[in-house]
Length: 337
Image (cartoon, rainbow, N blue to C red):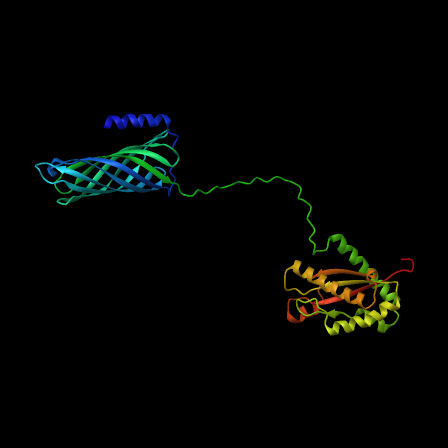
């Protein structure tokens, strides 16, 4: 039998694939056939049986293993057959590996149990495994048990397959960056570009200069400078805001050359993108109301500043209320425009 096992192992060495490293945390599950010869003091003939193994790798070359096996043995002197159970716990090392083949050496403790004899002891293991794939190996082990009671020794040969459940691996990726020109920033639909911001500021500056030079009266100047306010997180015009707009519509109608720039603002709570969009909705709501009152839509431009250029620094309840505004910027055009 030993010659057959040796021949099979040599053949597998020729066709097996290289063994994968058993990293720390890899779990081994094995099943095997077993044959045992018992110490003569037990009056037992040899037996054949089967067993299973489980182990965990503490390092690529060291594992902690447990196996159990059962068999039925005949006895000498005409005694009845007995069931035999053996359990092993050991530390197994892999001194070296050559290609798909690895040498195994282990030591540990064991338990030997029959219906007439119970003994504990120590054992040694020498064996080999041959990788068939990165997850399956053929394994052959020879074990000698030394019993504490009776001083005898049992010898066992185990032949079977082992399956390795590899521990999850961690992949570290190194990213090498090069100096590459950054792509042009994409303009969000609810934001104002730098060029648009500069254009609106120029309109506002011109408006302030021309408004001061062309104001018909102090009362009209105060009317046009009056700011409307919105409720928190709202773009709906209140009755007070409509009243203020109605007073401005009279002046708009009296000067058809006048162009109107409506800038919507919002208070600080919320993200910059959200406040930019909210300011735009407030400006659009104001423009819609002016058009409904007879002001030509082509005369009205809208913009938004979100939470920028706040009237009162915030946050704070008073500051937030003051910044929820729809402010009118009026440009009195030259006759030729």
